[in-house]
Image (cartoon, rainbow, N blue to C red; front, side, top):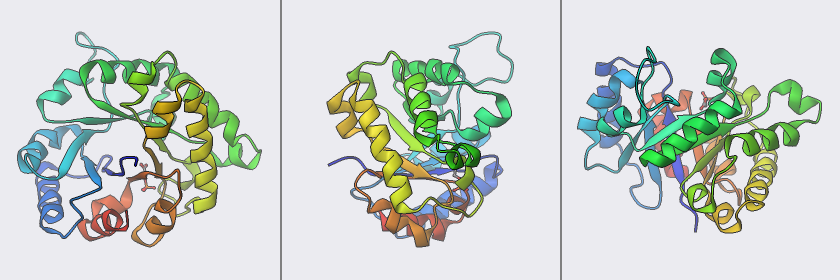
Length: 249
Ligand code: PGA
């Protein structure tokens, strides 16, 4: 059985106080504690406070990005070791908003992923096509290129420690979700692609779906054989909604 992961990507939302409030609501809520790995990814500035609240709980902490460099003169960047000191265990890499607004390439995401593996952080590597790309029949080409590029050069042993998130760009924050069948097709494609490198890693690899996941569509998506969880943006900012998604898993 593959690990099921429900991860909340809080993006640029929440002061420290707001983050603390949301975490307390999540901990107080009745969410499944067995069989599902729950991860929340607040902003960098809230990680330390979040760690203090989550320590010893069933909710793990992740960051939304990190530097491709270990340390030094990289103004504004945050390193893997800095994330580890504030309790992060996961890191989202190559999110489409980073690709779109910060011109992140597969090569850069590959370098960051390499560093995540080396430092013991679990990378959640994001891939996904735009609406134009889907409508012109390029989904597999685009996603295949992203998978090949971001995961280039990794061994099966490393890939076994990765998490992939398939997030069609047209579904992020738009209220439009891929149908369970559409998502399943791409998830299967991704698993097969990773299987060309290492069959065992492909078999155990959690592939999360992201893009307007809500309490009412989570179950249908999560029922698909190759959908092993969700990366949730908007709906993870409300405790009740996020808990409902966790409980649907
Ligand atoms: P959304 O965001 O759930 O608000 O669409 C998902 C994401 O960007 O990870």
